[in-house]
Length: 222
Image 1 (cartoon, rainbow, N blue to C red):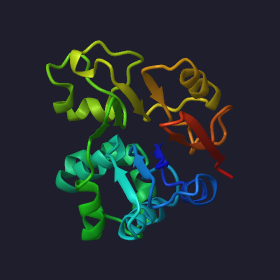
Image 2 (tube, rainbow, N blue to C red; image 1 turned 30 degrees about the vertical axis):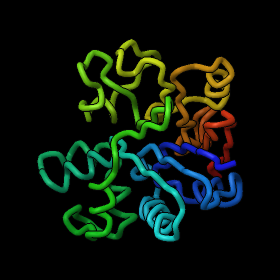
Image 3 (cartoon, rainbow, N blue to C red; image 1 turned 120 degrees about the horizontal axis):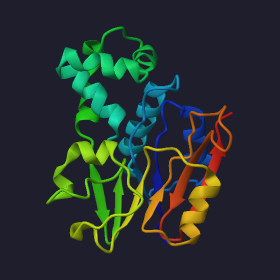
């Protein structure tokens, strides 16, 4: 059976990302991996994370990387210097250091193209993948890009989201909370288990949800 995985909020934690993909879920070219954004900032190996994603895609793995609010802040900083303080306040300096640059304008074209080319959401059947969530009050929530990278909700009433199971990241949750929502067959499932937050109780894990079986795989950020 072809498997469908989702991983979110890697935040520069390359080692657990590699361990999760290569040794835990053992990703194959028959699988589909959807990444829910926030590959950069906070952790110290943002470049390695992005390089790994690009490498997997170049080798023919079925990878769909979505955009997170941290990628949005990087892109905004590149095109508008007045946006830079917000990104730096949210650990953008860790990403600059990882890429070996001091100014976002120095970033290589390959990486800028990667960030700019990221999609905001992915719909597969009744499964809806997004970084954060949706503006439930919008006439068309799929047109509100800010909502998709910044807004998380526990439930949705928008008719365009009716019948969908929304899988997202953005706000870290404990493994036990995620597993509880899975067991309850919740229509909104967060899968950010706080990989970068190793000092917080119940956090410090990177997780992959195999969506067809609703099985959660997790590795610690050691």
